Image (cartoon, rainbow, N blue to C red; front, side):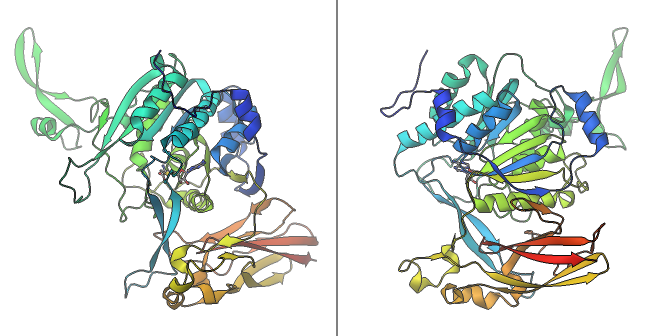
Length: 510
Ligand SMILES: C[S@@+](CC[C@H](N)C(=O)[O-])C[C@H]1O[C@@H](n2cnc3c(N)ncnc32)[C@H](O)[C@@H]1O
């Protein structure tokens, strides 16, 4: 068997990998209530070994530690893995941060924040070790009938293909999918413009899930469509057929509105800023791409995982296609974006009825992390005054402060956000400060746990801004307590710099 070797290649030792990188996963938040009985029982009928009280999982941490920690519970249980790891491009990727509410009179305030770096200063060998170790852990997590899709491009796709052959077995290679998209205006005239990514598709064994579902079909080409006719319902047919050897001119209907997909996918456009699904994340992938993969390679209630989840495309699509999901990212702002994307899923586009909204609330999920939270926050460069950018220590150790008014009437409580104060405001650039018109413009997200118990935040009310809906509610909905007693209300605020602060209040309900 042909293998790829490099000087520093770390020999695969799955037990060592698991133990060396293990970090306990701490549950930080719960969002939504446990699944109701009806859903639960349908899940139990669907597959054996189902976990009761299932929560989808969004995990902040380096995926090598996250996967090492998941192995105990999930080895051989994940039905589908899609990853879109850094491609070793040598660049940094940005995230667009908006400030405040939309002011239609002028161009909307947008700032760049570094989302993650794809700059492998230590060289290709380091990158290969990084991927090699993680792919072994993914194999451990994948179920026997499971599939894995690895999204890459020309930079390292060929190296990773050989690693995949080694790890998953060349016999389990299924496709090298070409996702071709029209390239944006690129200046180069020195070589042909690069306009496709590759997606390597492997399965764990020969016996794997693969669905011939018309919802994954590709549209007919223009040539075929022109040759066909459409009836009043828009269904394609052609004139033909035969009877007793005689040619007829009957309407012959085409059973599916498209063809079974080939391995070149040129029917899925790249994400644009004006689309509903756009999250301001520069390497965000289209939901339609994940729709085809998830429908083909998993069934309802299966577990779909993405350990480089970025803005959470895989998780949002899994959610909308009634799969369970586990997602992980090493940056906190990616986790924040995903959290909002899932909380707002009912307003996103349906993947089944093109013109409709999804219109269903999210399934309960929890956020977890590998490390005890650190309090200080490094301010993104774009938010700082130029002259101090490189010259001083930029870690801000004090947390922002906010003030709220808590109105208690009998057993009903309403909370109003009243102020938000950023410490070290002198460090923030004039450009940002002039765009912040009122205190609430600093706030991106706030959530309330009306009955807080230490360690875990149970989100019972939340308001947040999304790229398309910039409005933030400053007054919560009423919360009604069932019993008298003393309660702790915990309020969490995440500002546009990504800083999170939590304040707790004791209240007495008579
Ligand atoms: C190409 S982006 C994924 C984009 C995603 N498919 C989407 O549609 O938004 C790669 C992501 O991998 C994350 N990442 C890089 N190294 C990681 C690691 N060791 N553990 C977890 N996530 C990592 C980055 O922070 C980044 O968000």
